Image 1 (spheres, rainbow, N blue to C red):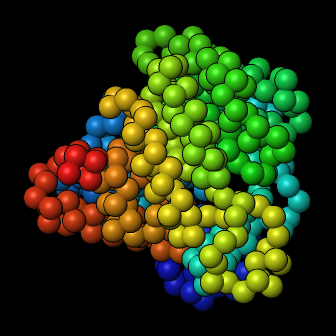
Image 2 (image 1 turned 180 degrees about the horizontal axis):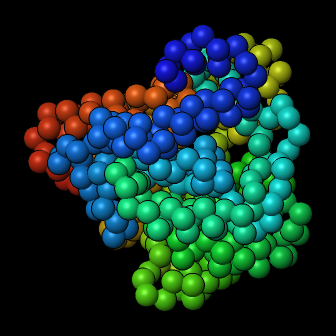
Image 3 (image 1 turned 135 degrees about the horizontal axis):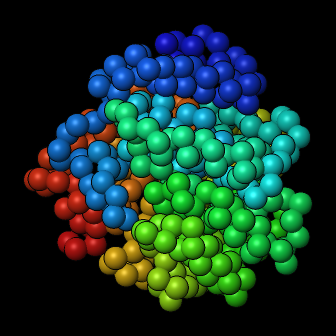
Length: 369
């Protein structure tokens, strides 16, 4: 139904209303008690070759939904039932905010890409927390691993950013399987400045302290999400800081402000305007950041690779390059309802074709060859 809707209706609508309508269909198909359980039985991978344990968490498959699709934790179960092994909700901010003025989401169809300048529109940590608590109280088929991505509220000045992130961690951390500190969106003024290690270090220490306080009976894994636009030296600096602080890993990468190498006409690109570009145009840069991180992080630290993953071949390339998990958003928008289960099925075939009995054996295989 989603695929038919995309071909006949959604592609003719402005991007943000189309996203809301499509997300409504996803939630309806995946979240209804009877339909949802039947959907999960058909689409959630049960192939043993894809089972993996990452960050101390067991996943049915390594494909996750990236942050940005389900900002307010309204469709976690539905997305899990469609085949995502993990869902990263958010970005959630300490204070509710409407985001930037519309229009703020655009398709570049020739590149199978999106441009967004959403600006962290979300209901705020206090509103999202009860939804996460309700999810934690359920034991149903298809429940994915739950990541929580937190960012800075736009109205909060830079010198109060640490307290703002701490407030989100306090409200949401107890319900998360893992938490990601997002300092890499191009759509919140000054946010990317927080990637400078002298600013990032106290922020990450504060979030770590808060997670330990609100979840004293377990360690909530903590990761940081960086942009694809960082210079090599800055990627190295973030990796070294992650090692120094004992972070559990890095999510790489967020969207780019670059418009290089696009097939879409210059006029259409200009009409979309400013914002972060996602989709296949990010592939080369995202691969490069992944490889660079993997050479500097410890073996115990994970890289979750995101950016330009739209088929099983690309997902497998990232895994062989050292990604413990992969995430997608734009690939799902263009791929449709059956895309997650299809990717997992094709990924399993690639793993077996290389002679591996489990996908964990494939992680970093190219680094060992």
